Image (cartoon, rainbow, N blue to C red):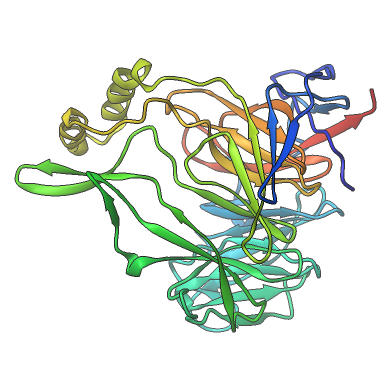
Length: 400
């Protein structure tokens, strides 16, 4: 189902549904590229999220298969079954709609039904109902059915322009999105600032051929002189590019601006979506950022961080707008606004598939969103002791 509007409000208590109304997005064409621009969020359909999760798996009382450690992927089906790829246990686990453990697949190793000790174990749901799990350090992906059975292995071959390529998503037709360093993995220098070039490819389902879609720059680095030795460090207040699949296309944000670009399956730019969240100047936060980073670091790293921060770093004039993208099952694009390390709220902007800015959403600050379905938001939460829980919040919709 494709719904043009999404508004989610989440606080410590049950919320009344409040619609937002605003100006419709302005669209224009430029050399075959459609550009939409929204000055304000607008919505005509109301939504609610329950005050508490409808499902919690794991947490401090979790034991055996309910003990979660380094959950890499989460997928919840229309039937309410929930899958978690637990990289700390080298296992994919299935839970029923009530959160009861059903079955597991995997262990550490390099043989059948085994994952490398350093496996990323990212989890991808395929259109045919099967699941794919990244085991790139064993040079392969596992494909299993909904019962965690009938395993099949796909070899991650080296392809032209895709040596050491890593899966990053799956298209609706089963092709893969993969990324590899371009330029031989060497940094590109622009004065003091350095970037890696990243090449994103569309790869055949069996990983036998590919073609390049886009190249994007990594977040900026800068060389800092540390007692006669140079260290390359990330520039504060910058983000890494985010590229995700959206049906048969990709959407991405390169520098964290409130601008999302959509390319088709051939890599051709088709649309640009822009909206206008509040802007913040970095000079207002730099001293607080320095103090926070140094105080939060391990004692042995504090002096090093103080030296780095004392250097003449090429800070951007404004903070990034966004730091993450998720495409929901209904095609809407959720963009997480950039958060400073000490900020305790997580704000997401929701855009329709045509680029219109629909709503601003507040979610729990400790919720790592992994999936947004038609009637739920699923992810991982960590408590004060860094213990993980898999949580599902119910998303309710009502007509105005």
